[in-house]
Image (tube, rainbow, N blue to C red; front, side, top):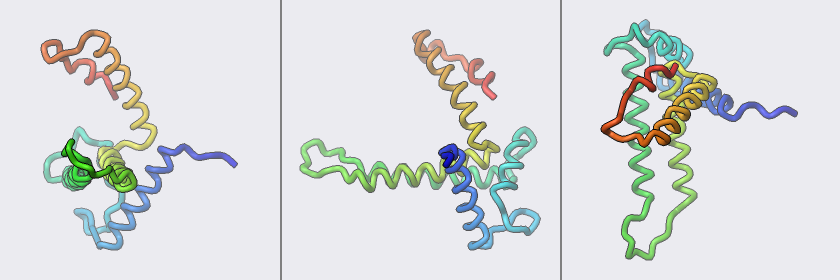
Length: 151
């Protein structure tokens, strides 16, 4: 039995979940039809033509707000009182991290990225980051030209 690509599987499950939520909550697009992740992804792929009053902009904001909130919830699980006798709740920490992943994947899809595109851009950006480390990257030497070549 073949094992499907795990990242592709996560993207697929997130698409199903988001479409279910859009349907269940009767969330509609600007044309009055039920919103779908496919529609958001297709619009996100045409990002150069999108303005502030688009569904993509709205849902990028919604998913980023949710991701920020999940980050806050994770922060609340961490222990900052070094004198405390408390212990980390790793089960809940792991769940909060996966909650972040749900919204991160939704952000990626809304920006027009599928699992392959995320992998490709990650691979390119990782190379840039390694090159920056090897060249003693700092604020003074910061140059975004290397990022602009990523695509």
